[in-house]
Length: 248
Image (cartoon, rainbow, N blue to C red):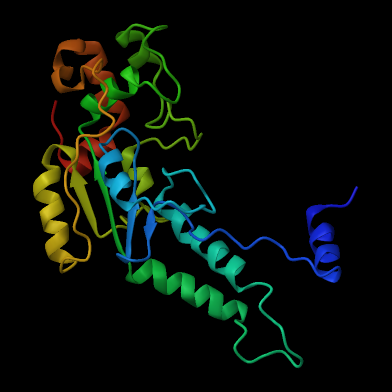
């Protein structure tokens, strides 16, 4: 049986053509606004994502990529668009070299405004417990049992990233923050206005009430905790709590 690459070659020889690469890399990257949004699950990202989303096929459909996956994935995206462009002999001078592709990916990542949003870890854990998508646990575990078993900030996510903290979506391989601005869900309206100012109106987004779970108790999260579960979450997400200055 022929593999896809062999089929594509035969198709070209017979006068056919291979399908074009996906028009867009990922929902996180907005080429019009020159912005990159890191969507950490359960931090109020749906309203932002809806405003950035475009009805095009994506190379990577998963909306919750971390900053390194986006940085490195941009090279693959630009490479796919650079391939099969040589139509002349000798090779046309306007065909990209690999260095050109890598430079374009690097310049895109460096120049685009990169932002994200985080959330109080204690409230976020309640939202993870109550979630209606991904790995659902509320019908199987008590909240205290859920906290006892929780190990990662991504434990109930459909995509197995094993991020220990929200911060892990936002840092590079050296542990340094790799985004330009981090909003707090609790202060999103004011933070979005600050982003509009910083980007001179290029990234002009508004707060929208999307994907709210009416069964979630995250707004009154204090009521679900006892001393043991509160301390467990404090220890588990100590890095987020210290970095973003959250309190119970």
